[in-house]
Image (cartoon, rainbow, N blue to C red; front, side, top):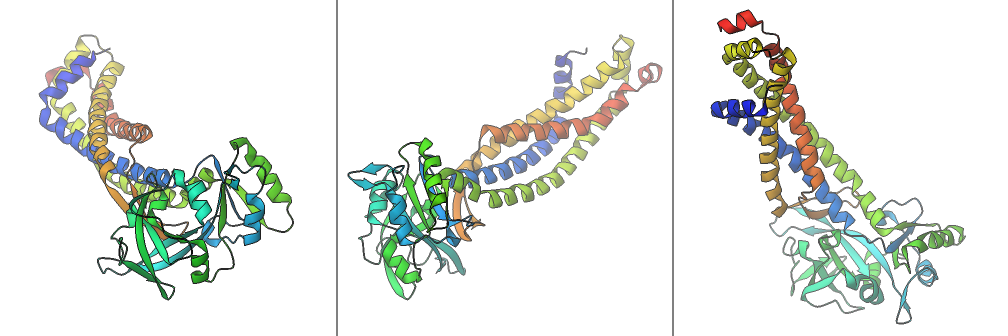
Length: 387
């Protein structure tokens, strides 16, 4: 086998062509990694919204809370279920209403759908207090038209700032606080008193009921109780699983569209790598002939040129992933397909993103180097030594 040090020295002697090839590959890896980070950001944001300790009750057949309806009586019945945790003599449960209203963008560039969540005082203090924290202002007072906004909503829409008011459903809602929720999808919502929002939206009940389980193993017991109750047509899901499933359509769309774009870029980068490697073979005919005359077999020459191509691909992968990792500081807004509301999230760089991006680069390197390497291996010794 031809030693790897030979390939490294060969690349160093041809710095310009090597840098050009690696740069082209790194650009494609950057685009591909950015796509994966975008999809992962959607999944992580919505996944962080739920907890494996919680269960969510929805109308059977509803995949999202926007289309679900849960009667007030059902909320009372299942909040008192033995599988639900209690604190201070009260069930750790939160019956909530989720509705969508249009708000004017702060920059005047049209309107956007915004999610409004109605919560009860007990639900806010007992269930949501662990993940939702006010960072500016205060909590809304019960039975009033006061709201608090997620930090991702701040100043993005007209009136979405403490001390200002938002007008929806023929009334003004005073913004009294800003909250954070660990980077979850809640930060792209506006929260109000459940009864006030039910009245404003003219809804007969809640959208869903979220409960804290005594232990994760109690999920099956709660599900059995809900399934056999003839009065209500409800289903039970683990909360984190529900939100993870909700991210599927949007994340899948982003991943599919981005992959198509990355493949077009990859075609150009692979073609560039192939041209570069063909040029190297043409300029190193005598060198290849010398290697063959020294006793190196065709497969050794083939492997040597493929090694060079893979080294350039790995350099491109490292550079592309490095630059893509800086996108972690960038936030992005888009429409969540499950709720048709705007959601804000960050690019998420994970080991899986780096692994897939590296495999993508290796595939480009192999495709770009295969034909030139084959040509080098097939050169006849007599002709090659003549140059």
